[in-house]
Image 1 (cartoon, one colour):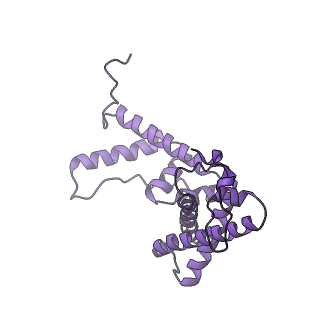
Image 2: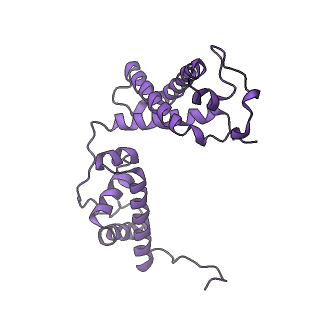
Image 3: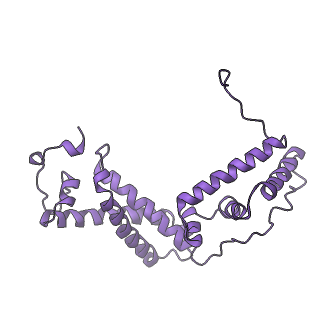
Length: 221
């Protein structure tokens, strides 16, 4: 039975200090019950965010308690806003608190990455960093040849914008949400650009004989 079909008469009111039996109902209806549910939800979000920030604290330039606490509280506030705008999408397939934890954890990770990269430069110029892709003498000749082929593919198959995306995301390991913020674009747009990068590189490597051509099923036309 989906959450939307549950009878309101079957749900007990929220008692102070107790999680609601039906979070969606408690959060959607204005009144004392909603106030208590919001307080309980924020407490939950803060706990989840603190846990995630603490796990990722090594990424922070100053992983002191104050910084971690500020990041966790900010993440909890943003996560609550995101959750409440999507409240009607909760289908009851998992516990509401488990669903809510995911919002807090994802937002906390975003906050940590953003803070970690706040003072770092993201190389967005079209610098030819791929020109010398020859590996060291300890590497095999096959790897050296493939490395040169990939470098050539990057230069010849990609647009300047695609090369900048490849450099930032694949080489410098810039978090995609950080790069989206720096470029004034969206994660979705960057995912699409990265997909195009991989498609073009694969096609170029297939054409030059450095990758096998994709196979088709025997029954395909």
